Image (cartoon, rainbow, N blue to C red):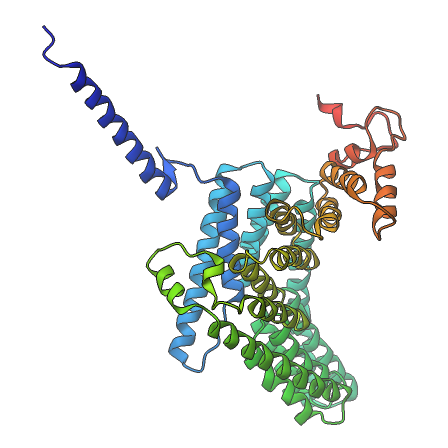
Length: 465
């Protein structure tokens, strides 16, 4: 006789299902179930990019040495997190495009740490995955650049040391010039390697030891350039540019430095004022609610009646960062506008488009493609839609995804009315892509993507099938 009732059986089933659901929830929160990550690769890559971006835009310099060291440590932790997340992408997508991008980004981190051998290892991994792809070309170029500049540093440093010793023993114009030029080339090579600490140190040595050389003002000016436009460290760069005007007052670089400092000061003061105004217009109660985990709509984040002013402030801040060539912070301003003022549809769509164009200008084509997709998804009615379709196709062509580029250019032609700036160019590209010169049945864009020739019928994408 069965001692268990039908109801008891149902309770067991429900309890079992609840346990499974709870286990699945825990797995979802931790990102894995049964040891297998369930976070989509695209999301994991975005998380890695976010950690990398935060590290890149972080201001490390501080008047307090302890605080500066904390900032530096925090930056390295963000880079470590980025590497860990990119490595997970590589592990799950061993042969895909995402794995190539992850290897490329990890190489960028190792270059920041001056670990050239590790960077080259990841470049080589990209080439092994896809020898003819976009990232492979970038990797080959990166490897060649590392090897070339390391050799330049080795050769020119020895030349500098030898000729400086000769000059000190028997001063001549020739030994002075050779030693100075060699040291300048060492600094430039370090800059090309993105070892900005050593680049600055060698430019400073050039100014100190060869102040009478014609390139000394350039070296002093370049120190400021590295701080301002590469490290985005304005406090570090300020005394370097002041140094140009003080040490070389009659030089061409001195007049440039004076103008640049005046313009930069005006821009930074304006950005600070605009940021203070934005903070003033934040709804303090909404901010407190958000800290407790309550969901707050973008419209509730701002003091009533000031959302339009906040939009204008963000747009001006982003534009100012662009003037300073600080693309990471300009992008951050546009992304914040699009997120925190999404109820302002036109402004939000404009910010999404600007984000894509800045990534594109900065050569980050895949991220530009993602930004344009974000625009299509969140603001399909935007006035920027057509131009975004065209620019996205340009990005696909840049990363050698010619099939997607072809589809994009055709889509642009189909949705564009009238004689627009890009219509004729798109038509020319599509005509070229549709050629089949060797009449092997494969169009030009298919041959391009496969790395085969459209001039030879025996070379075509189907050779291996």
